[in-house]
Image (tube, rainbow, N blue to C red; front, top):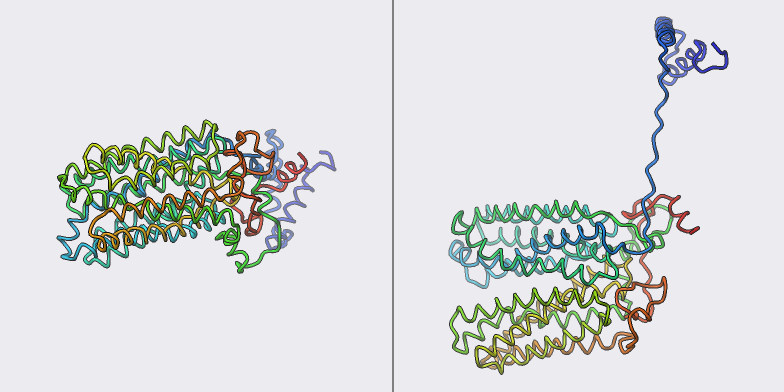
Length: 522
């Protein structure tokens, strides 16, 4: 054998001696092991077998870095997942009223105390949205959505064993409400990250799950109540909610070019005040175009839910029977679904800027609400309900689609979380204010006038956004490489910097250094 070869007996002895030395024993003290090793080596050479080579660990391939959202591909799977998630969140919230009568009879409590179950759940879902956004910024949307699906199903499952109303407050209101907060905002933000030109269409398709599930879940939950009673029905609804975990598993992390500039390298430090501020997007509170947009959405949200609370009661007050009054809400729900789809198609056409379309739908919704007190005849009231439902549904996907144009795609998680939290103030105050106006005036006219005024006020705030009166076509207003190309001219006067995030290696959208270097060179 070649003396310099690594397969000679002497080389084998050296390797074995080094191995034994690393193990903490002297190989010369084990002659039997040496002789056995030499015998095995000679047998392998005689049989023509090669000596085993050390395993070489392969380095993970660098993550693909996209200069801009792919506008399709796996993004359509994200849209499907968001569709199911919106159905299993807001569809369940809207249909929990089916259990209302059963809870009143079983717990022998007043209706106002039973109503707090859904109210607490909605409030927690909106107020805890920044938590879901911060966790998604640090760990990625997939684990956060999966955890939220687990909490939402767990809360409903535990509520099936409730023996008091406080148990329902805790299980459905707090546990499931927190789970809904971890699901809804990260799922919509993930849709926005995967789409750019078709962002409005993708968002509208994702949000149609709310309308369809509202139709399907109400009769389904009633059937479950009649068959299994309220405890068994809640168990089945909990099983449905656990499918949110599967939907969260479909959300793949996407690395965009803007994420690289948002993850500067630095020394590892604990979560200080600055890190927490960036995680929760508190730097956006000083971004005035975004805060004006949040104010407008808060005003819109103050009047958005008033028809859901008082339209049926207003129709009954006019002398229509309960089925005719309930039919008005069904008509509005069908129009809401059609409005979301039409708005997505119109935004995808890119013939108009998104902020102009949003102001149009917001103003029309306000006008339709103001006209409700003058709808004394049933056909006219049905027509007004159709107009309200269509316009109110059309503006919803635009609210979420226009955010990346104001703050950039790098701030999408934190901005949506802040928006959800602040706009909940309008939702919580709008319905009680309209009820106070009804008690003061004796009818619902003042309530609908106030609701329409909130929408018109929100439209005026939207008009104050920078660049609103720029009427040039969208394609001519895009500064290359500076901001999102969703719909034309910038809605903000200047781009907002992306907040500092945790260290580079901890970021959920981090890439390998080689990929970052290649991207910088290109």
